Image (cartoon, rainbow, N blue to C red):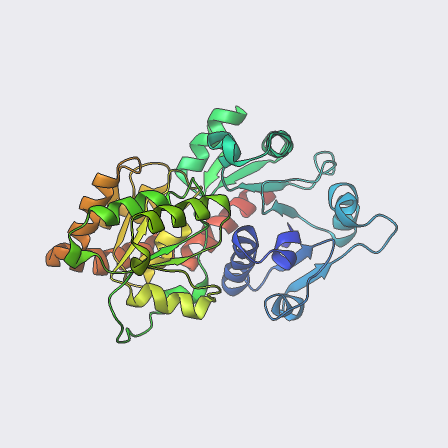
Length: 366
């Protein structure tokens, strides 16, 4: 089978949607090498991350070769190239579809990651929200199948875009393959960990307030991995005003190998986000054997499963109690570490997810 992908973010984005695109291609090429994968992109930012996809067996990188280039090619010209290449299934990996694909005869799939611009509109400019909404609506209306990266996201798609239930399939987001191979713990001073963008939706300020409520002997440092703007400044201001600077570390750049080490050696991973399409860091932490305290809302109970502790993200007191339990209840910690890792391994294993994706493609190709 020849499967086409919108690979713009695979070759040009090096965070969330780009990581998702790359890990999707990784698990498919690893588990189904007999198929041909066509990666359509208006440009390629060449580096150590993207180079392997230009050379991988079974992958074909397609860029515009005529007058129409850039986003115009991605929107209007890509379909003609797919027809030329004999594409049998097209997968839009990041919430969007080419506008003229509907009449092309090529069956299509789109992955919807979240609708955060609707659930947290204050984080987005009005103009951006209108554009996103139109793109998501078009994709949901015109794709033959929709993949939601969690049951929570599926329910949001059904709620906001009025599509039939049978059209939406949940396939969880794949994790970077490195996390499925555990590494050894190394000696380090005790610390807790937060990984993610630092914005109001992710709710780091409530973690800070929860730490403030903890007994002094449990106030071990929190390493914060992630960038942010005004909200990050707000969090840092609160920390400074309450004389808590000694409890926080803010590393500038952390790469995957270093991040895996941070997860593996942390006493606790804390992630009480208000809303996530999936909650990837929760799964990464559990695969590394790190106990997780997360939220009891959105997709976080799915990502964390039965062996994470879930708190009300609106309550620093509740977050604090869950953190204390995870740090002090020895039996619970062992269950969270061992059973949490097993849950993540079985539920989010690349082979499982690759077969679920291929099943969607196969049914469309029938």
